[in-house]
Image (cartoon, rainbow, N blue to C red; front, top):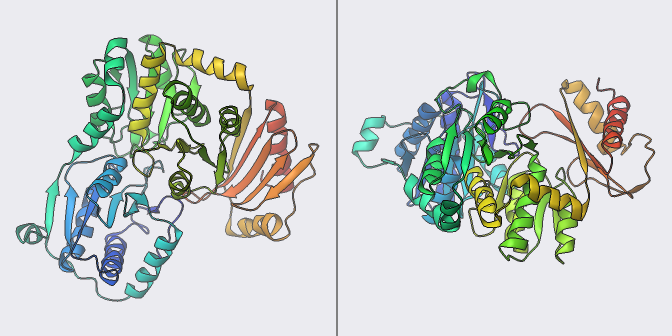
Length: 472
């Protein structure tokens, strides 16, 4: 199959489509694009995470850039994805690449592509890359021997972690955190954030209890995604060690998961609401907020209370980062755990988000559980139900025909206000609730999200879709 981009770059099964030949074809395409744009005399940076073959894949790509005469800087230790985005932004590079499949299962690997400013490549850029890949397919892809490329100065090994960490340290209130004497439980999920987060926390004089910190390409047999199902050990650590907060990041550290002081898992929606509320109320920031179509409308309520607007965009973080820039938003995020904040990089950063939440505890002098109760008292409660369904190609075609061509939806007991096809099919109810059905851009799944004022109503709407689309 040809290399195709999803919402989070190109991801494929190792040994199937994720092969040396395809990795080098990808690199050849980027070389062609850089030459066509006249930026080949600049350089490109590439990083890698802890996945199987990630370092080798980085080197295989660099060997192609070297053969094409393009200088490549390789981060020579496994590193967080946001570090690469920061480096592209700070050093004004035209492109950067990260070898990762983010939160996908261990049998996957992939490549994320970043463009000028440290942004996720948008649809126009990825479509352009796919055209270059198609034109390079079937031809010869030259490579230069790695050691020879290093000797010729076409490959340079770097480790710019300090400049990235210093940027975060300068952006948070380290004095307040030091004075708070916090105890933090931390689960990097066998991924790449351990050095970064522990360094910052120890600099702020926090006591840190770390679990799952070793290098394990199988991620302990679990999905390297911070969810309620995967963070039970972190919940236990928070309770057992009486911690103020539990922090977790996914495999490449661009997504975050949180356990509050009571041991309760906070949904990423809750994290977004907490941070926006904190940044506006306690830090005095002003501006709108951005979310995708599958993220909580509680953000809309909070924004409205501060005289601001919540902007809705399609799934894919490139849409969030673009809207943050366009609207000068305070924060933007998604219900899968990715978020970014004004003034930082133009993409997801679980490490910076984690430190902002630690800062929130220190600055407010309150426990996270108390802050969230304050928010619920002001804005009410809202409940989200999420369902994932696997499908065959035939079934996918049937679902697309029903929802997107015929534009049919199940009969529902709640009055409908409007239906949007911005990304999949989203139905807005007059009671403030909504339901969205869309195909994942990173995994072969149909995802249904429903948010309602009542938890049972959210479940019933999901069941109605399940029966209507014959998903069970």
